[in-house]
Amino acid sequence: EKAPAAMACFLLSAVGVAFGGQSLRRPERCSLPARSLLGRTAAVSRRESLQLGAGLSATFLAPLAAPRAAFAAAQDPNDLSRLKKGLDSVQFLLDNWDRETVDPNSGADSPDRVRFFLGLRTTDHPLFQVDKLLIKAQKSLPDDVDFETWIDSVEGLNSHIAKINELAYTSSFGEYNPGGGKEQVRKYLLLAKEEVVQARDSLQTMVTLLKL
Image (cartoon, rainbow, N blue to C red; front, side, top):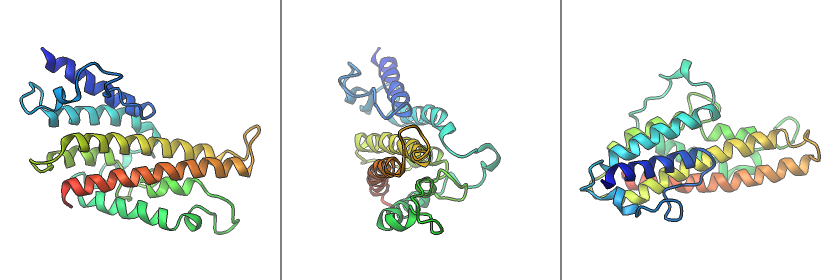
């Protein structure tokens, strides 16, 4: 009886993440206890549930990334080392933030560069189509993994990438919007940096859980 309700609760969580990072799985949004979905004896397994949720989240997040259909084979969805490489890319951005977010020719802030380091601009970046990679990664989780932590990390990464995409895009046009200017560009760029830090943390947790 509880399994269908638990599944509905979890799918609402995926939709919530896709539309702004609010997880409907939380107690205040969903009356079912979180553990009811995660129990090993539930009619619908934890792994199948998250796989469905990831697929649903990918459907809503797809318009935020670069066009994908023509480049579906650009990255191997079975190569879990991409998560570690993606983590290294994000860390490189944070370590070199002032240099990497500035146009080398004009010296002006270049917010769109942030999207490059999160796999949102090119098909050869390790985090390109990361949603598909996470479906594969879930099947490789150790038996003793803290699955609640894994769920939080997946939700977190999806949410942070969506916000980074939005903030970097908004920042790119901040100077030309009514009431905008270089100060607005910098404001949104710094907000994007906060999300990049949290995306890095989510990736680090995943790499640790997968023992990569």
